[in-house]
Amino acid sequence: MSLSLNLKCGFVVILIAFLFSCAERKGTVNKQELSVLENLIEKNIIISRQVDPKLNKLRFYWKSKSGNIYKRIGDLKDSLLVANDSLVFAMNGGMYLKDHSPQGLYIENGRQLAPLDTTTSGYGNFYMQPNGVFCLKADGTAEVKKRQPRSYYNDMLYATQSGPMLVIDGELHPKFIKQSTSLFVRNGVGILPNGNVLFAISKKKINFYNFATFFKENGCENALYLDGFVSKMYLPANQWNDEGGDFGVIIGEIY
Image (cartoon, rainbow, N blue to C red; front, side, top):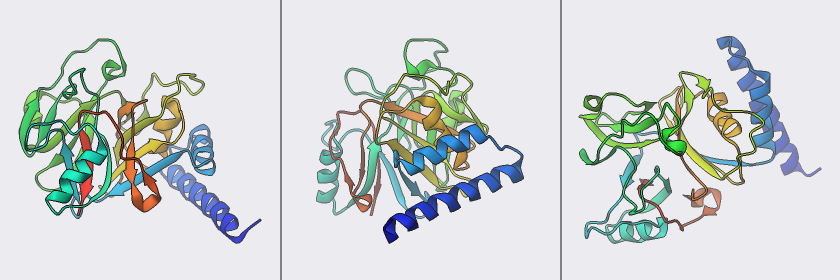
């Protein structure tokens, strides 16, 4: 076994032990979920990005200044370069309608560009209740919560609605089934205990239970599903350079 493989295996063992001890102290040990997380790490199925919303420039994008919908991460990257901004990380930021407009609430730079969807039943993952909203506040903090009343979002700087919630108050969505055969590439977002934002995408097809477990066992009290099948991530620092897409909203970190 090579030195690099030894180090990788050692890291996995240490991480799993750390997460288990943390969960044990909180009284929330779930050996089944820890087993799922161990499998995800060992097989390198999830790629993730942590962002400190107070220190890093995290933005939501939908249309360019000329009114064209970006759709592709590469088009957003090129547009930002014109403004002397560089794209560090990006992923699709929620579900969208046939015209690529956001499905549900969308706020950009303090302006509401799409209204909150308060429908409680309907077809598709978006309407698997509860759905939720990922927000960035003017004070630099971020949050993921179940959908709140419309007035709650009046002072948000950025917001995107999607569904279903993956983790709700520290627990997996009750409708997720470990043995589910509904498999897709999926991406989502959660908030870590230190306030950082955790973005993740599966490199391979995965079910809701296993994907949500990644967020829960990393300490996210709440996490939100963004989309599946069409999901893309751009993260060149991790040799993940997917600039494609055909989206509505794109979430990007710039410098």
